[in-house]
Amino acid sequence: MKCSSTLAVAALCFSAFAALAQDAVPPAGAAPERTPEQKARYEACKADAAKLCATELAANPRVKGAVSKCLESHTSELSEACKTARAATAAEKAKAQ
Image (cartoon, rainbow, N blue to C red):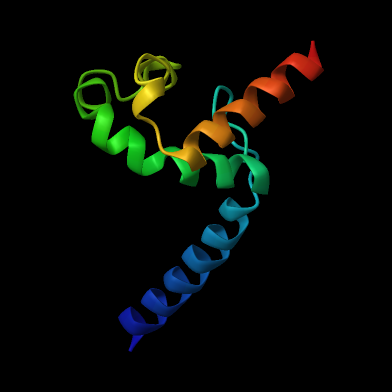
């Protein structure tokens, strides 16, 4: 009985800790949360990246800009949705400068 009470208290503490951890600030260097527009652009190019940049994704999964550079090298092969998304991203970056 004592063991089951201890386990119940431990489970309760763990679930409370897990709930608090979800509200924690992301660690330094973590990628910021994407906006809905950024998520839509990502989705627009996801299939193209998988098809055209599989080698780059495998070789450089965490190298910032590797997929973008790959997509840029395959501009003529991109879907219209991805081309539109990339143009919107470029316009947004130009506007921010």
